[in-house]
Image (tube, one colour):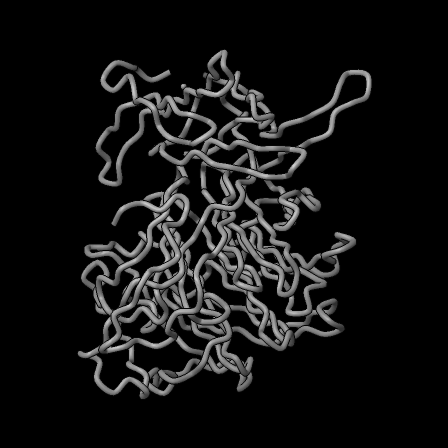
Length: 465
């Protein structure tokens, strides 16, 4: 494939006999929006109401959330195409009006603001008004993007919490229904995806850009913008270890090996630093450095045997490293074509090159994640969309299910440990979407004669292709 005119070489695995006969189909699985974390309060007012159903109604990104607090249940109105900025409820407490901002489409062309009038019982749109009539409104406020419940006498407690600045870091727990987020607000948050609630949060010393749980789940590593990394106890939140790499350059990825014996730290100084891990993730010592990329590290994955690393860089290189053999660069990349990877988050590689759109400049895809059962791959793009492809996805122009709802570039996606959920992060819209993965198993390998069917219904938030 080519990015910005530069050829990217990827080797076909030996198990693929006839590449020309390979067909990539839509995956049998789909996504349905399960939960939206966060609330937009930093720059809007009068945006929280109680409906006749007893549900709270509020918004974040392009989603309007209907939240039944007692039942801990959410529904979502997802017909907006840009960030929702205002909300009003009819006196009947059933009909709702929500207004979206004037924005731009993926080509930079201006879009008009519009108001949707919809039924909160059925979530059906009744009317759209105001196209061509409204001007920009840019209201100013400062809050911590949280909803509180209580009284002056008894005090207040949060019922909805979220981040207040751009999000990038995301990690899912290896065995529990927990995931971690961090970003430019210097907050590290651990969320309970089953209870749909914040489990705990911690103020970081600087912006958190990446994170990963140890395979044992008891510690988590976080990479910071300053080039420092921290290891925290996932229960006590105590800092167990720290280090600094990259001469102050920001860290883009931290990743434990499957056996938990190594931690790889990818830096913007073009180097991957390898640390030996002892005492179940509580002790760290420098093991070596993988130096050879000609641009900053963007993504990396460990092999299933914890011996090798595959990495991507900002200038679209795909390199392979023998970590166990002394962090050596493998010059013959052909020999790595059949290697099995414990995770697949590298956005460049034979198994995923079909996810790239035509004419891409190499920056359109921010994050990619293969499901743990190796059946589907989720993609976060720069156009506010989440895609779901069949895995492997090794044909150009591969079809995908496309999901909207984010109002900004989607910065990260990760599957839960059991593949029941997918979590996606909106960048500047500060939103966290939790999607339920629908549908039964689909074929793992590409088929030359399979037809493929979608028999599980359309996922909530899916857009026409």
